[in-house]
Image 1: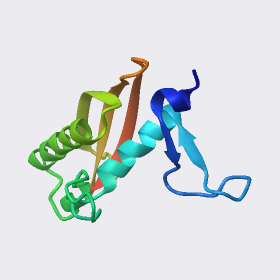
Image 2 (image 1 turned 120 degrees about the horizontal axis):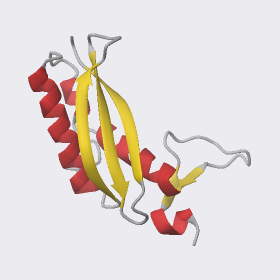
Image 3 (image 1 turned 60 degrees about the horizontal axis):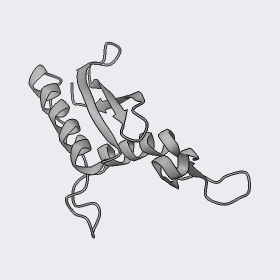
Amino acid sequence: MDSGSLFGQGISFPPRLGANGRFAWSSGPDNIREAITVILSTQPNERVMLPAFGGKLRSYLFEPNTVATRQSIQEEIGNALKLWEPRITVQSVTVVADSSDPRAAVASIQYQLVASQTVEQLNLTVQLSG
């Protein structure tokens, strides 16, 4: 069984053209990683037919980089992924201040792929006001 049928596939994110001049596709764990990024970078009400979809992370743009803000981001990530990505089980989410940028936080998401039980990790930066 190939990873596309096990984990799913879709147009790559960000969208790009492949060597054949057509949209590139992603499959397997890469497709799931890209889906997580899409979920967390989408604001609610951006999708007309699915207004509740998203992770609200851009709403933290003007929030201070405090422990309370980072805790709120951590909870938002866990809730959004639990709701919108059934192919994973979130094992942990940690959000810490970015040591190289006082206006950013780094979220580390550890998750298990439901189909294979493989543990993966994704790190992403959330911009804050400082």
